[in-house]
Amino acid sequence: MVGKIFRSCYLWLILIFLYAPVVLLVVYSFNASNEIGSWSNEWNFSLYAMLFTDEKILDCIKTTLLLALSASAISTLLGTIGAIGMFYSKPRVFKILNTVTQVPIVNAEIVTAISLALVCSILLFPRTYASLLIAHVVLTFPFVVTSVLPKLKQMDPNLYEAGLDLGASPLKALFTIVVPEIMPGIASGFMLAVTLSLDDYIITNFTKPSTIDTISTYAYNAYAKNSANTSIPALRALSAIIFAVIIISVVVANVNADRRAKQRGNN
Picture (tube, rainbow, N blue to C red):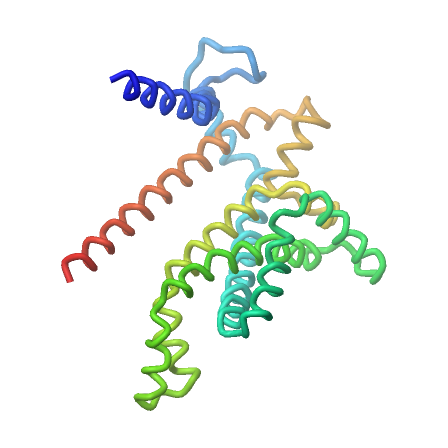
């Protein structure tokens, strides 16, 4: 009984610690106050109206979404190819490649950001949208590889060989057998890449041109460098929307995963 109480208390403490600030942000997005820390007596949707009428914020949202989807698509393609190549390599080569792939994940992001900025400077490659896109691919690529590899390890290795024995070409066997088997890993890698790209600030700030702003860089500059910006309160509404979209995506993904698991169990 005592253990059950402690487990319940521990669970609630973790939930409060993780989600209380976000819930407060969502509630605060309906408050008309223009300053963080002070509450207004007016509760309405004015911040959301401000959000969807502010051209600068809308431009930042479009840029961020386009960048995240483009970088994630490239990273997913390269990461899937890399994971398949690693998986079918010799054990020694696999260990080396796996270690090289994991280093960027555990490496400090500031090191990656400065390194990319230095490479651009040495190669006389100006900060453009291309440099920003390349930087986000470098950021997200290793995470796609680590998402796809477990699915390759779970796959029955005899399936691919059986397809070849039945007359399929290596390329056809790859797309008709291997890819469908690892599709959940590919999808999760893509979603993880999108999340990382949307949230990144450090690498984006070091590699973007001055004419481009993403949500993260705009929010930081608005709060830290331009406190008089009248669109700052709208960022609370934007943050609430991002959180809601993430929650809905996670719930839908879990429901679909449970449905697929039940279908497999019934079969």
